[in-house]
Image 1 (cartoon, rainbow, N blue to C red):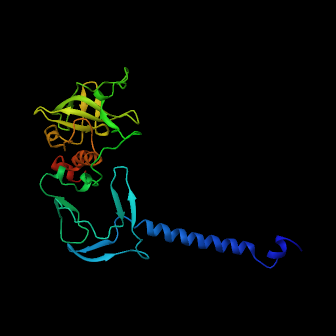
Image 2: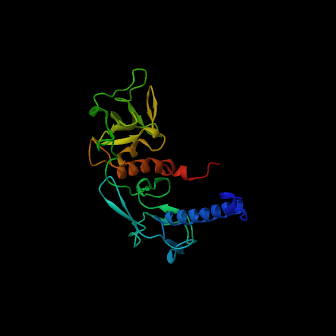
Image 3: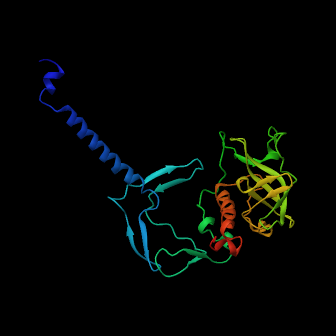
Length: 257
């Protein structure tokens, strides 16, 4: 017997391949487990409001890795030290571990529950050439609302209580996707706030917003610029309307039946 057959005549090739596959699979699980710990680890377990232990989970922690972002900021993960916790605008409903949080102050701005958000980079999302991808329609001369669609500009925005919150003065468009992302709403007080498109129901007689009341448009987080919105500002604006689904009225926190 010559060639490969002579070498493998006494081998169980199927068992060897199966063993190699098992070793590869174990190695893959090991690698994925390590990489999954780059954010959120070590875990901090709490008992009755006091931090009592730090958990690293299965196997060890991964070595630190530097991530270069398009915003020009380098991030190291996992962090050598846990970030300083933000002041939580909420208190536990009771002393037991895992108790739900009850917002303190303005629940729409507490940043908990449906109003929670991630601290993303305070820079705009950008397009192919580094330009902000979400800008007012007035800054996009080649874009317009289709003639067969309802143009929201000039329409009145109504809250869940059917009270007017303001008037739409412009549309903020994601020019990379050719989609309306926000409606710019001018309030009676003179300020302008953004209304996410997915929270707006555009009707011929006006724009209906179920998430918040008419007077609560005044509290929508503002953007630093009138021509662009940062990733962090997007988080805060969306969180405000999300919180309204539960906290806009006391009745929304009660059982449905």
